[in-house]
Image (cartoon, rainbow, N blue to C red; front, side, top):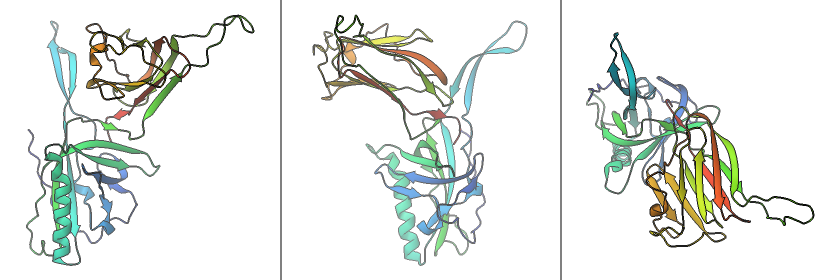
Length: 324
């Protein structure tokens, strides 16, 4: 593991005004906030909060680091076989101040708890969010690693001090908190003869192109609303597909009835009926591939056998990006 050296911290005369973007290394002007596992939001670039970011020491916001697997070539050089994205570490210096020593201690303790609680059993990660002047945002899930300790400088510790926090990210990609979604719903079925011969599909809800605006593959979530007797999703570009049979032996539910719903998550694989029952046994293993969406356009097909009025498919995903 690389050794992270804390930057030299000098007490600033003032912090950034509230709501005003500050220059951050690797990404430019932005605002920042941290949401702890309890859902409490802590502004990180607002001096009126009682603490603010020392932007000069921030690092780890740039592109993902990769481990490359290569094969040597007979005529020299090597060929890339696989690129494995690595967890990232973000270094985030915070300057904490108070009008009195007790106010400093109170703020220091509260911030320390907000970050370190990500390591408590059952709590889960916090979320670091970077906001841009145009209102767009990107987030990354973080765990506290180390660094919440004073700088031990003369005069510090009375009413101000700084911490240089290291945050570990198991998924190195940044995500857009605003989801992308695709909705397909069956229309009203009509008679073949009235008033003229017509065909109303009871199977294919949509052959469409889904755009992934991100920098890397995303793993979508599907919500299927009945009626349906068999659910099949196909990625036309790769040929990968999977099916869910609600009446498969491990489930034995029978057809999805009108209004009944099942949710399919692709990473990690999970299939849940609306009651919370585990339906992963209804997937068409071992041939099934719970595919993801590559960057750019993806031609996909949503097919529900036995569909009717009210049948619907909702695909949702959060684009993932290399940088904040």
